[in-house]
Length: 387
Ligand SMILES: Cc1cc2nc3c(=O)[nH]c(=O)nc-3n(C[C@H](O)[C@H](O)[C@H](O)COP(=O)(O)O)c2cc1C
Image (cartoon, rainbow, N blue to C red; front, side, top):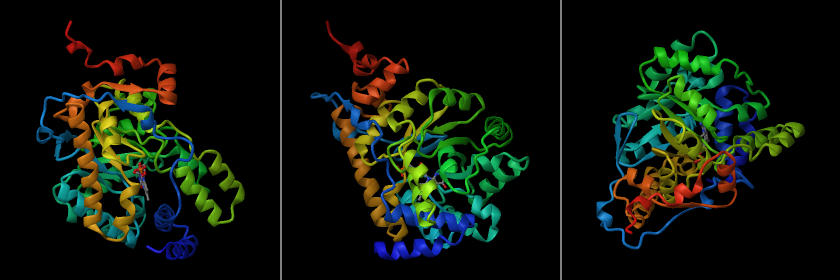
């Protein structure tokens, strides 16, 4: 789409300060501006597989199917939560859902708050289930929205709206703190999540949105009963960035300047994946945030993720309603993942967790400071050494 048209739309939309107006503004900003981390990376550039020159498998043996939250997926990929709550979002969700159904992968809809506030917007989310009757479809609501006592009713509505197989409670303290009208109420979120996991049957996912989850919070989240953690790490889409642009659109110079300060705040995706995966036993880890290639995915699956999540690269083709383009982007990622697996002799996703990986640079420094032994990662095949 022509970036001038997007700019125009953004300016018009900015006057609409409802949840619905905010949603479309977020999309238009993500389509027209550079919203990714600037200086910080996912940490995946610090991670390398040790190549296996004798993989002793055929590439056709590589099987990337997995089970996530009890559902069989043909690839370990989740189209990560993006949208809903605006007529334009209906097209995006329909397009993404059609692609997900075609590839038998999972998908999350964006925050359903807009439809809770205005039920006439429900169709912008439920269209995903219409287009993808068989996939693992994940509902979405923000942590600040589960603090009141109606939370169980809220989650039930979220599930019913899209016939959700799981619900993600998104943790976006960074975004709320930068957003001019942000809700910075996070006291009580842990016990609210526990209340929900006890009373709601569908699995609950705790989902960060770009600042990552540290091991301390991962342990806590497992304790209160979440079944999966989407670590939503730093290195991909930055919500501080998106809110910086929103503040700029409104001439709010101070808010924009604060947003720029926190642009790269957070735990890089690779580090957060390791922190969360190595200190939990019964939660599945979805690694989202800056996953751009199948090699990125292979690395994350190798360091503890059960699946990876992808948002931003799919937004533009989805906005344009191009199902085939979305499928093509995902097929490339799938092919790259298969090649990486072949090159380390991994015929199943779980075999990636036995591959040797070298961790260098800032990522290694961070992990060492947090007590991880990076030598172990580099020598995972050692038990097979011949004397
Ligand atoms: C336009 C857009 C809207 C998003 N809306 C939501 C949302 O409503 N709820 C949520 O949990 N995450 C939301 N996210 C965050 C993504 O699910 C994901 O965690 C993040 O974008 C990092 O992945 P990426 O680097 O592949 O974009 C949104 C992302 C984008 C790009």
